[in-house]
Length: 160
Image (cartoon, rainbow, N blue to C red):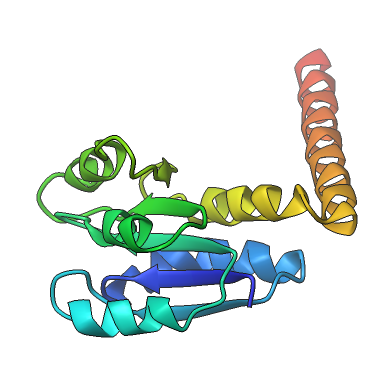
């Protein structure tokens, strides 16, 4: 497994699905688990001790300590995925994730931005995988072509 996707709750799966989809699109092996930094700290630690992942994506809402706890325990890159909550629309999660203390770095994507979390994991892995780097280049080119097509369609529509 190259990417471990951890969720503080099974209700986070909707936001995490974008990361899973991207990783599958790039044929990057991944696993997803529900492990809470607060409700199952021993289970989280046991998982991390036996986990060979190269990158971790940690999705959590509210206090959102999962990514920070994982980053404190591992030496691999950790990507935080803030989940939109009920009270502050994910702002609380976002702020908790980006305010890590010195020595415990965590990369952070936007609230609910699972697709970007997956893409960031792919970009990290592509540093040591030429085939993955080439697939990313193709992905970016396809995105650019789609934008050009949309612009051409808009220009055509405006000329009418």
